Amino acid sequence: MATAPIVIGTASRWRGFRMLVDDMTAAKGVTLNVVEEADDLPVLLQLVRSGFGCTILDASFISTLPPGIKPLEIKDAKATLDIALAWRDDSLSPLTARFIEVARELIKSPKG
Image (cartoon, rainbow, N blue to C red):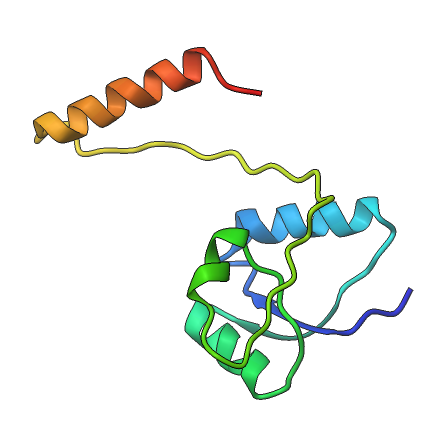
């Protein structure tokens, strides 16, 4: 199935997200027509604004998109991304310690 031209983050810099997108599209039988890649978000958005193609982004970026770029949230995506929390262990502020404590509690009893 042919798809619209896509600009997306480079595999080296956006590795985890690219794997997620590749898995999601493969599950739907879609092969992306990647016409351009970029290392960072501002360049990706400029490529979109310049008409090179569409892009696929994390939904958390929707509220920060510049004028001239219209988002469409993909609601039926069943994709997940593993994340990790990391901190400097030799200089732990009380706020950071509390954040870690809350994160550990959430991990023990995830919602859903």
